[in-house]
Length: 510
Image 1 (tube, one colour):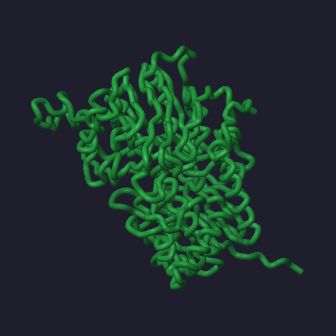
Image 2 (cartoon, helix red, strand yellow):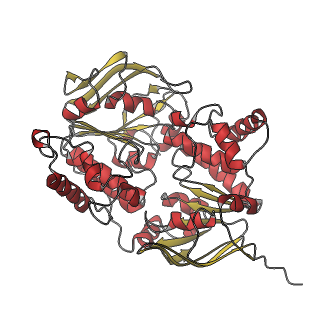
Image 3 (cartoon, helix red, strand yellow):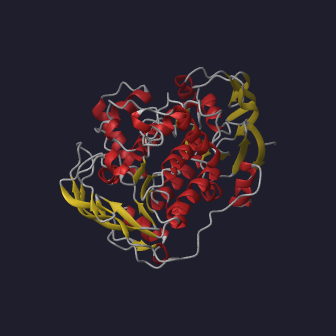
């Protein structure tokens, strides 16, 4: 007796999507079996997000067919996708900022249940999977990492047959990521399919049983990631050999560039995190990494250092001069530059051209002599940044919204580095960007430090911090652990600190 062969849970055939002259998806064919954890790989701009939006009903394909459990279907909108059993965790969030977490989840589920009942279930699922979120908190107060947790929770509450996850571990400690993997494997064993997008290739190799690689909108490879190396997967994505970050020979760091002593700052919103006695030195020529799970005071610390908020207690010195009373523009004029975690909205303006975005933090005697903006100089600045940092775009007149996340991030990073800062604050500099863009950004930060600047990097990506940082500290509950050299700690020890354990950062490296 022959065993019945089940059709794929999802099958895409010949999917085409154009935006004007740009071909985002070009004859894409993809199938995902029931209970399969399937990776979708590609650089920023390769067409992954467009393809997933087609599956979720956000975007309509120009050509091609979609089959669900063997039957042709049309997915005109996300409600139709959810009725089929498709859930999606977006990298770029679809949340209403003026509503609470629970209200957003209720809207996403189309739920008519009493809010108190739904809130109790949110708390239970959040506790089950280690996704700490306060259901009564308004979204506009949440960090980027916390917003992603809301998206994950909203999806899990749908009990989906196909779960699409876009960079879900970027806000988790290693221990929490392991817990998420356990959960995904359990879902897969119960028959749920998972489409998994991540730029963490070792994560793909450990979790996924199949992978489809996109490049320039086309499928270029189908592989079993378990038998590939991270480097071979990366080379398929970029279509060539992979370059690696290089660091100059070890040398002594210079004198302190930024000194923070007993910095204390109450939260300005109900569920925020107060800073309590933050103290550290950032030396000239070094990269200091600050790790921590989102929501532990990173947003408040960066606001205090960048001048967006004034701390009532403690001191901040830049090159031995107090700057605690200065605002962002005054601090920038003295050599302190800032790369915020939100690319569009804080780092750049979606409706502005790249030339206009270049000017946002670069108004000086060069770009605006005698107070008048020199448009030719500004355009030349934008062109230089595009060329130097390999920004893929149509030119200096391209709107910010037209760039992929990785290219917008390279432009913002390049703009701040090009200013020649004495100190650079970088919040999650490679969050959600592809491996090629991440390598370029990390190398730019390394080169900046090698030139004598002090670089402070706040990130949840421990592999990144251990690769580029000279010393590392952990922010947990508004308190900062003492910075230690990266060679004297380990991922496990840092992960425990991120989870709120006592100071164990000096545990020997594995």
